[in-house]
Image (tube, rainbow, N blue to C red):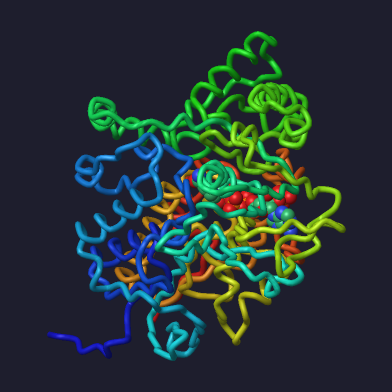
Length: 535
Ligand code: NAP
């Protein structure tokens, strides 16, 4: 018998066509569901669609920052560099779409305005900015953790006469800074990657720094065919090793406690991490982000390395962080600190006298006006909750998610939230997400959600929702784990501290392997912590 469907009625609507939305679509379709992905951008890739700033590159190695659900895909794709550039990641995304024939079920240029749950029908109504209405049993938010840009509310933003850019919304046809005097505001990962390249092009570059960041050289290099083949020959083992580690990818994690190691052993491990480069430092010692004294020893090592790179001691002092090492995400760079030795680059410290705002000519700091031709805001994101809160999401009794989360996000496993049945969040707050290789975490969530929907359909169930008790217990567990580390010690975006007025709560869950274990237990115990109800 053929079942007639209204064209806009689906089993599942997925919001976002980044890595999460694409794999979710593939998983749903493989199970025979009618699914539609809606995406605000004009193309796929999510955060990788928008972050096209000069030097945009992943800080996790390409052979690990890629899907692992398909062995054939893994074997056929050839990454050209140790760390993939943004354009190459987009090419990979396009290949995945073509290979799994996903494009027919993706609707681009479609921003979701609201998602409202109809209790009597047990269905979601998703309304787009153009007024189109889609309905579905399941609504899956694949909206990304770093997709809502954060532009500080600087005075006079409109007054500035020149062009302004945000690294997270970079024009697709690029920007030519040749001969220009450019301001970059911010010194996080996006700035650390773009500053060396903007400095090469611009006549003059002014970098406005509020807080210096730890950055470790990435040592990016082309990947030879031999290297790729060596990894591919044993890909499964590499992926498995990654899943046993805290960041969900292989960082040669050292389970040793530095507190039990000799100074020579600590030094040797730090030198090894420095040679490995970038985020490999997160694997240095099991107690690096727990024991302040250990952290100081590692940080001193990195500070020494930074000072060696910068010729002017005053500039070196300003660029050397004093914070807990790794509390804010470590950056991975190519020639970042060296760029400040260039004659055309000037570092402007705004830690004590903040940026007062923009003028017609440039950036005002105290009584000093810095005239520039263009301003680049590398000021980050309203992370993890930003994209969800910008959609008017309403659950049972019309409760708004934004109200429920006004004192910070509350989820069960970062996958679902009480009062919002059949709504799933891929890599939502309360899951390891941003502290891991995102693609591995995404795959684990997609598979959890896919299996859960399969189970519901087989058992004839129509609603799933976490209990308030399970959610409360999970939220307090996430907080307890964070409180046992040094992660609460700095003003990071993990805590929402970068967005004025945002509630200070550590949002991601620390530890991929225990998290997966917990999810597996929940399923093995019949979706423990969830209420499932029949049709
Ligand atoms: P970010 O780490 O939040 O950095 C934002 C920068 O803007 C900080 O230096 C911040 O200073 C500064 N800032 C914000 N408001 C300011 C103000 N009012 N005045 C002066 N400075 C201000 O953002 P991001 O660099 O875009 O990176 C966010 C995350 O995206 C990263 O941590 C990483 O997870 C991801 N990312 C990854 C890659 C990669 O894979 N390689 C590249 C880019 C981004 P304060 O520190 O003082 O707040």
